[in-house]
Length: 185
Image (cartoon, rainbow, N blue to C red):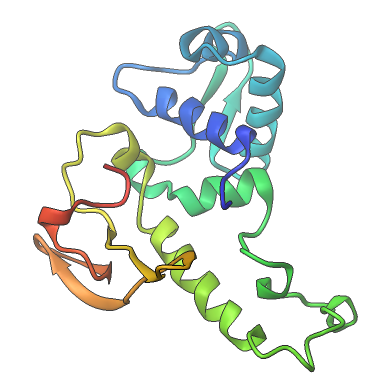
């Protein structure tokens, strides 16, 4: 099963609270109270988000944390990278600067070359969804997805990829139409 970690989920919820209108700087305690998240987790997340430049902190009586850039410029891929590190579905799908660390089966693996393509597709989908999209009412079309079963005996799904214009924005299209729903709705 593919899923983000609990800390990443919490980070998205936390950043969503910062992104909502009328919120100035929040202390870690205020952010924990506003979201209902555990204070130790909030502190750990804010430290990572601050280190990666997604939030900025200010000391003093009016201090706290706030978004470092508008929510329309914070992609889910940025948040995942800040909390979990570089995104990859498999170890061999990661771009590794050290070839010595590469998988021991890479020379005999029939699927290795395609993991980079698959990782790129998923990463582009995550990069196309912003924090504003996550907290908003779905004002802009997100990455359209249509999943079809590969076979009746196989639970794995495959996606068709092409370019498509949804509304007035070009997005990656995985074979869906607006009437079939969008990723995230």
